[in-house]
Structure formats: C-alpha cells, structure tokens
Length: 235
Image (cartoon, rainbow, N blue to C red):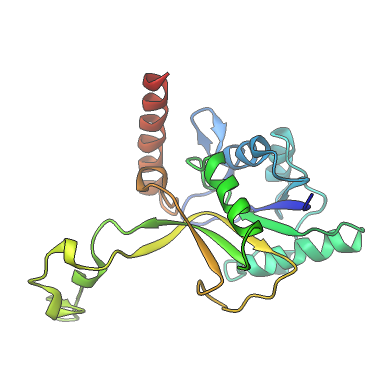
C-alpha cells in the first residue's frame, strides 16, 4: 500500500483574521474540520500540522493531528509559500526515517471539504501518469467578460470583443478551490504551475469558500449551515 502523509500548514500570525486557524466555527476551531476530514478519510499514515504556534499545536493534537515539531520562525512570515513549508516537513520526516509515496497539502481553512473528493484526488492520481491532483471549482462568471476599473474611475473590459457573446458560448474557466493538493513524491513535476501533469478534482461551488477576510468567514458559516441542513433533510 502507498504511504501517504497529510500536511496542514497553520501559522499563528494571520493578519486579516487574527488567530484565524483556531477561530471558533460552529463550536469548534476552524482547523479541526480539516484534521477531522483527513482522519475520517483513512487515507493517511499520519496527519501532521506544521505550525509555529504553541496554542495551534495544542489544538491540533486535541483533534487528533500530530505536531512532531514547531516550524522555525524563518518559515512563518507573510512571505513564506506553502511549498517551503511542505519541503521542510518532508525533510524533517525523512531525517527521522519516515519516507512517503504521496503527500496531501490540506488547507487549515477548509470546513466544507468532503472525504469523497479527497479520496477521488488520491485514487485518480495513484492510477495515472500525472504528478499532482488539485481541488478546483468553476468560476461563477465568465472571465472573458470581466473588466477593470481605470485610474480615471471608468470601466474597461479586458476582452471587449466578448461583450455581445452569450455566456453559454464562452469557455468554462476554473480556479483553485483552496482545499487540497495531492503530490506523487516519486514523480518530478513537469509544470511549475497547474498544467499538463495536474489532475483537476472538480468541487461544486456551494462547497468552496476561501477564508481570507471576516466577510469570507461569515459567508463560509452561512454555506456550512446550509450544507448541513440539506444533509439532514436528505436523511
């Protein structure tokens, strides 16, 4: 059986939503949902939280994750990318004799993530020649008809030629859903960005919400409540 590790980055210094990763979300800290979904999937040999923060570490352990080390301060500022955090975690595990075949980067702010899509990502990647699988969702509006606001406070379309085209005649566009990212550790990535070796795992839009601002957080609460109510009605 392939050996898989889940890595959940969760630094303590979030600015726009203070203490975001452990902020209360329906009576549980936000990060608990990512941990519990990863554990429920039974895909992982270990579920590890990478944090620089003692309180986040205690919370993560309380909900079943492991925190085998605290992340160094040089990997905990606003400019450190998740790639460096994953590399640090994998290197630390390797130094302790732990090698894996796949890792899954899971975001700490994904309370709407579901086990079935996490499993789909692993299974499709395992059975393919790709090196990555990424949670994605459709854009809510055709990007071909978007516009910017000029310095003169006027609207300017990026592609004016699309103004009269029907939405259904424009190609569908997708975005990163911000839930999970699978990687086959034994395969070199052919593309730095999402490209020919990345499998898209399409998540319905009603299960996707980035949480970067307090407005995002409130919207995620509304969405989570609606999803749970729908699930209860279907039983």
